Amino acid sequence: MNWHLLIAQLLNGLALGSILALVALGLTITFGLLGLVNFAHGVFFMVGAYAGLVTFERTNSFALALLAGALVVLALGIVVERVLIRLFYRRPPEDQILVTFGLAIVIVEIVRAIFGGKTQLFPMPPWGMGATNLGFLVYPNYRLQVIVIAAITLTAIYLVLYKTRLGLIVRAGIDDSLIVNILGIDVTKTLLAVFVIGAMVAGFSGVIDAPIVAVDPDMGASVLVESFVVVVIGGLGSFTGSIAGGIIAGEIISITTIWAPDYAQVMLYLAMALVLILRPQGLFGTEGRL
Amino acid sequence: MSLLEVEKIHTYYGDSHILFDVSLHVEEGELVALLGRNGSGKTTTMKTLMGVLKPRAGTIRFAGKPIAGLPAYEVARRGVQLVPDERRIVPSITVEENLKLAALTAPQAWTLGRIYELFPRLEQRRRNMGRALSGGEQQMLAIARALIRDARLILLDEPFEGLAPIIVQNLIATTKLLAEQGRTIVIVEQNVRAALALAHRCYILSKGHVIYDGTPQALQREPELMHRYLGV
Image (cartoon, rainbow over all chains, first blue to last red; front, top):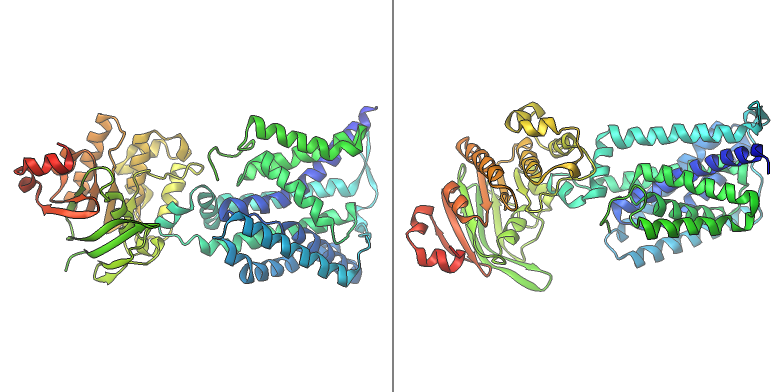
């Protein structure tokens, strides 16, 4: 094996990992704050990709496609939270899993009915075509841009979480929502905002990822499962944990692919099992949660 | 009119009946101690006053308005503040963020400067995470959160529990200072001597019933009562 290939795969892992981190962030924060296990989160990713695809085909603008992915899923998130999820915050996890799992099936089948089940290619935006010569390696532009876009998005989320009033309430609420209530704050008022922001980021990530992986109604499923692994590795409710877990998961998948593509998922679960044995709360999680 | 008037409340934990017909009142500027053995219902009373637990029957009036059944955040906005016995400092935000969080919905929040004047130790620790604090520092921060909200009624649940004697002395002095400044306080404390030294008036709870209401001086003239219900 030559080391150029290894570096190329490391960069691929970083691109994949940053997308996983973005999707996992929504999962981990909704779970941390609401205690909600959302199996419909992958659907937000998929719907975002389709919204982006339709917009890109009509307008030929990738920026508009990104905006559409975010906004359509924002609207979907509001409807889903107000009509359904809201009723399940206080229900046991098995009810939440059933209802979100069922919701995911319904939305996937609606998308399949409208767009068909076939995989559709998402054209690469013009600025993403071609490759950059890094001196020792020629690497596709688009994946480098994905890493940059993801980094900017993560920075924006960081600023919301660490520099705003909403962010302070969310971080405190993840730790101890009872004391936040006792201190005069109605935590449930933030639940909609948190759920919807998480959904929107997933939809946006779906658009970013689409030119790399192509679009089909089931594309959300594997991302969802991998994002759950990211949450377990990084630690529930942790911002840093999502990013670290995302990158670790992305690298494990990419690096294993060099030698044994079939074992990429197996290695991912092995890593998760290892974390669960050695540090059950996850790399950046706090002990005793749940 | 009393600042706080509790009439015949009954509180349950699930199916178990904890408080029976509890009535009490607290006047503006008063420091009232709730005494009683473990399991007598003191903490349950405090949680019911805060709105963390809902009484199944009875009324609670604060500043003349009924508050029983309101959610805790609404009770807090009206000026009642529980300092819980577990302290519940938010572990993964800083000391200063804990204070800012508390001040968010307070109509007339104190400045951080005023808090740090009262608790210089918290200023030194302001960038530390909640989880890094010692027990005494946590208790200071828990009280400071109630003060930064400028709560009219502070409910102190076991503030001295598990702390070193020197720190307890400090906290007693702080509590006394607050009472002298006219702040209304209800205190639950296992340390009966400390509580009696602070309080203007005290109640004794036994098995969820109020069985005594009087001044510390009057109570101390009844050693049999003190022995039977407080174990001293």
